[in-house]
Image 1 (cartoon, rainbow, N blue to C red):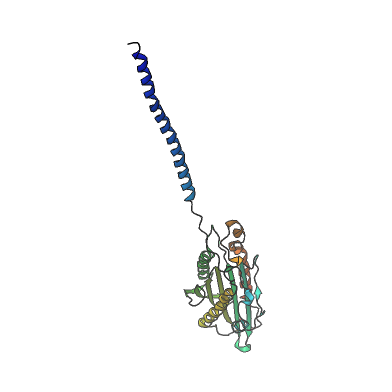
Image 2: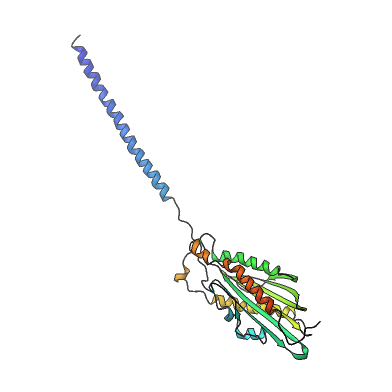
Length: 289
């Protein structure tokens, strides 16, 4: 009886050893699997992050010379006896973003009176911006604003607007009448968008000293002809694909500093001042009462 008790203790101790080993082995394997699973999960999360989509590059990276954007022959036909045949350039802080030019002239016909004509063209270019959108999208928004602005011209009468086919990617013709200096002026404004550039051309005229008021159809034809030439001038500035200037959109900081919106108030004030002075010519002829 005394000899069998120690033997039984040894048997029970040996039986307990495999159980402990199994427990340790399970614990070790579990820890290894946990690390692998955690690594896989982390790696999967990092790999699933997609790159930020880039905005399409702007089609045009420069603007044409506004005073050379309309042919000399067209200027002679539409603005007889122009004071400056080469046009008067408008002020701008960056001619690659915003530019303009105007012409005006008084064709004195003696006892038959005088015919006055005024024309101006303006270009606004928009760069592509990662935060603001593509240049074309930004230009489309400005195009809509310019059409609204033309239709809401102060003192305008009989305002009408319609699409102008065959001018740029999209274009609108706005016509209206305006009375000032005791004369009736006929206006036609063509707002067109080509790629990331908005072109705004205004042509108007009046008869002085008994001369007939120009017909709306003549003013409209002249405005559309000049607008087509201005849009074509923008097309000539397009650079070949793959050039360094045709890179994806920049970040918002640098482009925002050169954004056309910063010059808007100044340019509008300049344009308003030019229009008011040139639309009231100091003619030798005496205006009709």
